Structures are given as structure tokens and as C-alpha cells.
Image (tube, rainbow, N blue to C red; front, top):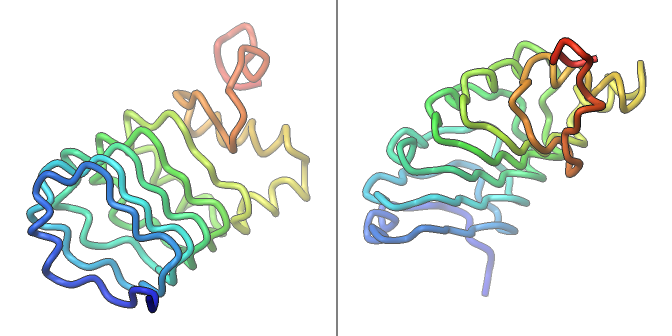
Length: 163
């Protein structure tokens, strides 16, 4: 079977679908998910996505978004996903803290995989893994997992703030 290159309007027929996996295809633009009233997990890793779009219609139910190994450099629109708990977006192209800070708008985010983005690589090159974790936890103190590793008390000082 050839890889899927385009998402079309037929997704609306999947009203009871809780998990949709379209990973490892050639999708470069996220089509409409309108009508997918039960979608909780969306997996779009290893495609050609460059931006997040058309997620408004699943913002009330989506709690996991897997978008690793794409070409995403901007997180515009992610703030609408207020129920999102898990975001796996390793190996994309996010390079600035200003884009990263859009994740502050996700009150339920607990598990973030961000390794392999230019921002993460630069932070690690400049200060090591600990510096990267510190900067992330300053911005997202409610995380329970970061880059596949649990956030523990040693990540926080006596004040309860990231060390």
C-alpha cells in the first residue's frame, strides 16, 4: 500500500474513534478532524507536517498528541488543546524559547518529549542535560515526565521551584 499523502473529509465518519494513528506516511498538512467527537490520542509521527492546524474540533477530547519526526517549527494553535496531557514532539524544528513557551497554555500537560529539537540541542550544548531540564521545568513546573525521564524531587529545590 502506498503511504497516505492527504487527509480528507472522510475523517468525520470516525465519530467514535478514540485513537487515530497515521504515523509513517507522507502527510504534510493536517486535514479537518471535525466530527471526531471521541478522539483522545492522535499519532502523526514520521510525516511531513510543518505546522499544527485543524485541531480546534478535537480540543475538548484530545489528551495525547504524538507528532515526533516531523518538520514543525511553530506551535501556534497548541494553546487550544487544554486537555492535552501527553505531547511527544521529539525531532522537530522548534528552535526558540518563545515558541516553546506556548506550552505554558496547556494546564494538564504532564509528559513532554522534546529531545532532538534545535532548542533542546542548543540548551544541552551550552549547559548540559541538567541545564535543559532546569529551563524546561522553570517554564512547565507541572511536568511529571520530561524526555522519557521522570521529574523527581531532585529537580526541585527546597522552595519547590526548579533548581
